[in-house]
Length: 379
Ligand SMILES: [Zn+2]
Image 1 (spheres, rainbow, N blue to C red):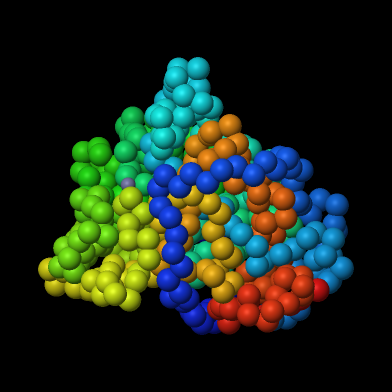
Image 2: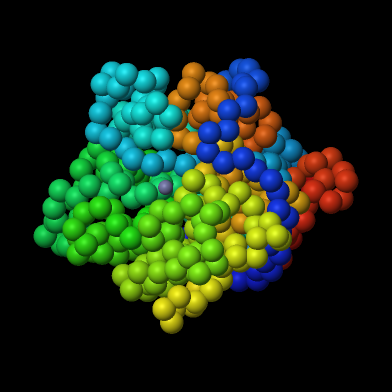
């Protein structure tokens, strides 16, 4: 895990209640050619000057410009569910979808997804760091965030090594992630798993041991409610029970090592509207003597997320991309990445403590909103 060099964070969480659609959003495709060329630093040599105040390499404005650095652009947060040990030929659906709606993926397709993101110049980072406005991705590369909901088939245990480390089924989500981690050391493989009370669906003791291993090995665990309920239809007491009891369970297994982020089942509610005060229980409450706070909430799907630095970023309604294939339509992976690669993607300056972007992108003076205490540099 990367160590934070600076600790000055000013969380100016936008509570703008942006109305967003949840699962099943089916806006028609606007055809955009796929750009496979990675936007990387390979052709831009960094300037090897390191000021005393930073351990990160600094670059000239010209270097930012030639690499297209833009930290006000969008970030892909992928939403996956189950990964099945199957080839694409074994399903009757498009491109590695296991079900009609594409919520589940074959192991062949999931592995290919990961290789494709890498080839396009994306590097993984922790969702928790994104929420904190701490984007630690190498110069010229773009952040990629992976999330998994429900826990089922994400972790399939085959046993334990002599040193106490788990042996995973190589076709489950974490089995493939570990394989890719070994193959691409510079990919910074990580993911956040949002679980219910059933955890990963294995025997409880095994799941507890795996969860401890996961948080020690670069993965995060978050809250997906105790019983996988639609919070949008719940009373304040029910919300407090569903959210609070799940946090309490996580805290009993991995104390203070889980993330205070919730993936809203069914993407509900879509906004923390002022006329529904019970939704505040998603963000804070006390259940059975356990007091909790939530610092971010994720919607179900459909498209790229805002940079955490811009005006329309809403930490209580963070959008995700559904990890599925639909021939480049209906907000599938290809459609989303075509759009990102067509000038919409966040391209990092290599320093998580500075925010760099073209001056013209904040011409209104209001698009940059949350600086998290970082230094702002424009070109
Ligand atoms: Zn779910």
